[in-house]
Length: 382
Ligand SMILES: Nc1ncnc2c1ncn2[C@@H]1O[C@H](COP(=O)(O)OP(=O)(O)O)[C@@H](O)[C@H]1O
Ligand SMILES: [Mg+2]
Image (cartoon, rainbow, N blue to C red; front, side, top):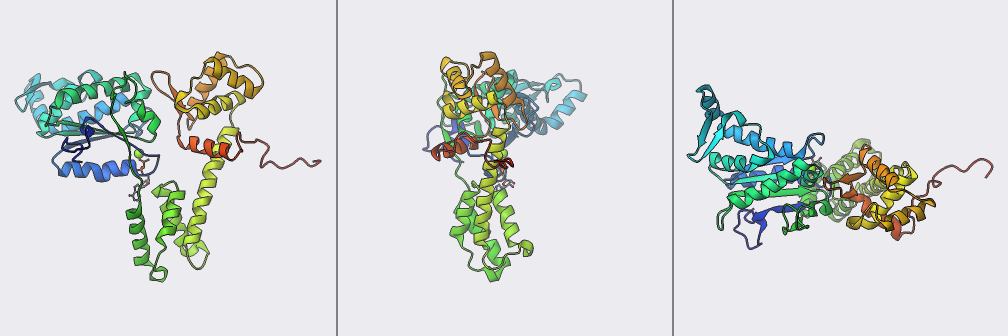
């Protein structure tokens, strides 16, 4: 937190803190349950917005609305009074004029004014937390909002005085990177940090709960819990559900619960992989080779260059036109759940970074590509 307010030796964290961690590992819970209250405690006005809260809505609009809501909370009385009195504009803290008719309908262009007004109306620094920030790159309004935020940051912050802190989180480091790596990227030059997964503290807490409720299970094997948690991909929801199941009197096993928990973790892993496999096998052949190429190339993926087209032809045994490749990409993006992500600039990536791990593991094991015959019953006359 001190890092955000510009008081840390960590360098430029106040210029924007970028936090990446896989899906369902507790980012949103941390941002809302730990970071936001801690910032509020430190006298900071916090605005939180999750761009995945409603993926049908434009990310630019979601950001603007979150700021407008916070602003309205501060201006509510002033603005209502002003409107009743027929005043067209109100002065906030003796500084900015705000058009009373426009409160609540902020567009990308005056996000800067809105943030400045909020900071002045609140009389404290503002922290804007944007969860799943990479989603902003999927629309032009979202990109514009990001650029406006950077400009707001540059205008509002002076050396030794931070008025606007930006925190961006994302489930995919590579996508978040696009906000900071290219020279034209909104936050060019900022660093992305990995949000560490829940760890020994969380395990100790859970183990403590079990021991308090079930004296017969003391001592709980913390190392085994830790191992199972890691196998669950550090996702507390699945881990806790499995804990509940193996500790239930109905679970039907006797003795220690730890081995059952570890088995549940392995089952979950197998199930995740089976899901990816069946998703892959359910695709049309052209879609499969497009996805294959994407998994193989990662950030270097270019869908239509000569090498890519040669790759598709080699794998399929027939040529694929640019148009066919385009169509396949589009349908990978349109399916529910989407397998492919596209930025407003036409860059593509797999939607779920876990797919890269799955691909790599299968390739290392020599089991790539998935075999459609596997698991099928042999015909009677075989
Ligand atoms: N510290 C925690 N303790 C217990 N459960 C947690 C904790 N953090 C997150 N969870 C649970 O894990 C699930 C995923 O958390 P969430 O914050 O939505 O992850 P993310 O934003 O990374 O996708 C939720 O069901 C949440 O309640
Ligand atoms: Mg989240």
